[in-house]
Amino acid sequence: MKQVVYVASPESQQIHVFRLGENGELSPLQIVDVPGQVQPMVIHPDGHRLYVGVRPEFGILTYRIDHEGKLEQAGMAPLPGSPTHVGTDLQGRFLFSASYSFNNVSIHPINEEGIVTAPIHVLEDIQAPHSANIDPTNQLLMIPALKEDRIRLFDFSLQGAATPHHVEALKTKTGAGPRHMAFHPNQHFAYCINELDSSVDVYQKDVTSGEYHSVQSLNIMPADFKDTRWAADIHITPNGKFLYACDRTASLISVLSVSEDGSVLELLGHHATQTQPRGFNIDHQGQFVITAGQKSDGIEVAKIDQSSGALTTLKEYPVGKGPMWVSILEVRN
Ligand SMILES: O=C1O[C@H](COP(=O)(O)O)[C@@H](O)[C@H](O)[C@H]1O
Image (cartoon, rainbow, N blue to C red; front, side):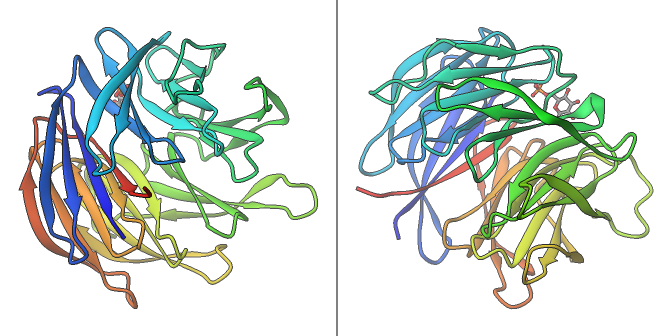
C-alpha cells in the first residue's frame, strides 16, 4: 500500500509531504509554502484532494493531489470564522468547518472538480465548536461544543442542510470540554475526547432507535498526574482494537484497548511523545502512529505492537514551526 503523510505547520505556513514506507520510514516528497497559517486538514474520501483551513484571511484552500501524493493549489473558498477543524461528509459532497472562536460551523459544497466553494449554511450560536463529525450513516452531524459541555446533534440532508436533531445534544460531565471524535469501524460506537478533564466518553448507538447514549467515561491520564489537563486528539485503529488519545501538558499518548464489540475501553499505558502533541494520526494499515509536536517543531513515527497496542518510537523528523495537524493518504491511482 502506498501512503503519503501531510503535516501542517501554521507558524512557518508550510505543509510537509512525506512518503510513508512499509517499515515506517518517511521520505521527503515536497514542502508546500501555503498562503496563510495552515491549521486543520482533511483528505477528500476519493483521495484526490486535500482541504486546509488558513488564517488570518479565513479560508479553505483546495489542493489537487497527484499520483505521487504531491500537492498543487486549485482553489480558495471564504469562511465565516477562523478554521479550527475541517471534515467532509462520507460521500465527499460537502465540507464542514468548525470555528471555535466564532462559535459557528459552516457547510460548503464541494464542486465537480473537487473544489470547496462558499458556504451554503452556517450554524450559529454553538459555543466553542471544536470539530464537526459526520456519523457513519452520513445523516447525523455531531459537533462537540467545548463551552457547552455537550455534543450538539444535527440531521444532515443530501442537499447539505443541517437541522437540529430531535435529541438536541449529548451531555458530557460538567467542565469536561468535548473536543474531537472517532468512530468504531463496526459503526455502533462513537468516542469523544474531552479537552479540559482529559477523559474519553464512549457513546453507543441503539440498534433500534439509532440514538447515541453514553456508556462509559474514562480518565486517560496517569494516576499521579497533578498538572492542568489539556487533551487534544483521538484516533482508533482500522481494526478497532486500539484507541489512542493525547494530552498536551503531559506530552503523552494514552494507549487504550477497545473491547471486541467496541463498548468498553481500558487504559493500557502511556507513550512519551513530541512536546505538546496537538494532532496525530494512524496510518491506513494500522501499523504506525504519527504525532506532531507543536513545541518540538517535529514529528515522530511510532510503531504499534499489534498484540499489546504499545507504541515504540521509530524515528523523529523535523518539519515546519508549530506543527499541529497530521493527515495520511492511501494512494489509489
Ligand atoms: O486547542 C485549542 O484550541 C482552541 C481553538 O483553537 P484555534 O486553533 O481555533 O485557535 C483554543 O482556543 C484552546 O485554548 C486550545 O486548547
